[in-house]
Image (cartoon, rainbow, N blue to C red; front, side, top):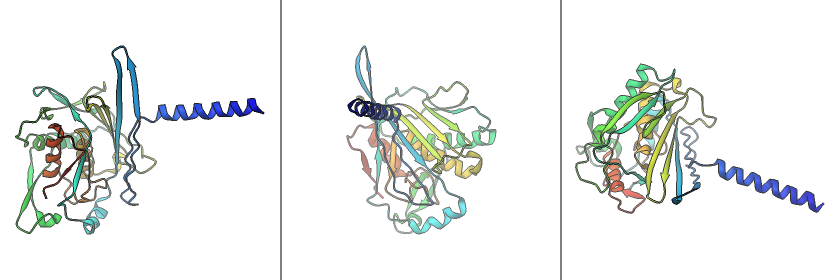
Amino acid sequence: MSDNKDSRQNVNEKQKELLQNATLRHLIKHNLKKGQNTKLIIVCLAIVGSLGTVGFFTFSNNDVVQNEPEHMKTMLRVQNLRGDTVSTWAAWKILEEDLFHVHVVDSAYATKERQDAILDTIMSLEKIEIDDSLLHKGPKGTTSTYYMGWYGALNSINNTTLHPIPKNLHFHVTDKGEGDILIELNNMPHPEGISGYTTTVIDENSHQILKAHITIYNVEKLSMPQLKTIVRHELGHGFGLGHSTAPEDLMAPQITTAYPYISECALDTIEALYNDLGTDEVMCKK
């Protein structure tokens, strides 16, 4: 009997060890239709090498973009942005002159139309002024600037930061898997209805992002505006943003806003993150 008990105990301990080794991602689940709360799973991986022990995290975000008719109904959820915050995680540590590679994995689903949509989300210089009253951020007649693409958004930050913000973006379709941020289009539905999933590998010791991988699920069910929205959101995670507490912001955990563009608040948060201000969230000015 004692031998059987010891055997079962060894099996259970082995199962726990395998589970711990297999779980290397922070999972943030978003289900727009069910309104589920965000769940975060954080797992540390210690890699021991000849130069010592280096701690790494994987930081993962899962996001769902909903159908456009339902999207319009969510305007009932608009709240005041003032006092809301955007969380941060870690920053890239690059040289200012470095190209920052945002690449798309070549596949049958990376059609020319989808490539163009993703390219626009990355490289667009377009910006728009939106009346603050539409997002309950201020009185009618006052406006805020929103950006359609991350190139225009990041290059609008004129202040010098402690760590250079990735502004020199480079787009490429690759079959080799190279790139700082890699975007993969997948037509398989996620079992939990997830549309976007970002995994970011972090060097904990230097609080530095090493690699980000974005997966877009069930891509053939997404319209081009929906694809742009979910890629725009996931790229925010790729540059180091967490989630906003404001439901009308692009970086909200549930993407319900009628204006899914890059906000001034998101850019203020990136500026603070790359200045190493030592905070894990930034309060919005509006």
